[in-house]
Image (cartoon, rainbow, N blue to C red):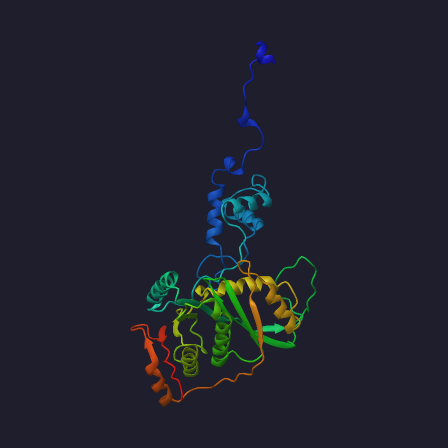
Length: 347
């Protein structure tokens, strides 16, 4: 009203309002923080670098600013403000990521190129059905803390004693249809176990896929299912003949199993049940039944059959069986095609 009446003219002095940001008062603060964090992000136990034996918290960054960059305690903002600056700069707290493969073999790029080609074929060919198959680490049954979180208070044993029982989960995952079939066994995950699970899964879903003629099996190159395992290849031939389907074995390269689509399901399952006590096999199976993947629950089954390791074919029998295999030239271990033999009518 005073301005309207012409008595005064007020000038806005917004630039003097409030407290200035720390980086405005100290122009080099953010670059100094970045230099400290980048150079000391991890301890070097070999003493070949100047990394420190410390976890870089906000308080530690503040201390390093005074020790290395000659800042004083009075001019630096508090640790909480330093923490805010770290978050804004992208140095948020993160879990350690298992993202660096241990090795890369000469055929790694060629294998992934072929896998991508196959994936594109599956998208346009309804006669192909893609399975992603893998076993998870054995689950120890007992009152153990598994590092998860829960909205209710859960009390676990303070020591990991001998487990009451053990079960190993094996998953057949259909990544193109968001379906998962979980098989649990107290025995061993052998070639026969894998083949039996595959047969059981196909019998369940067969009516839903009448056009399928080829099962594409995406797997890790593990000891029980690689393409040189005689018993596994013998059982795959049996599956092909019994189901009258072409079996296409496709393997991920060594040290790159995390790219297998089934690993995404394992991550969801671990997050789902790690905050609970898996104190019995029935509890473990019930928690597995309640996990959801793309709004769908898995089909869970406990396999009671006892499986034995060490089952193998003789070299002569395997040489005869090898005639059934169509191996991809140059990548013979990683891509194998098994076609069924036509069934003959007796009598």
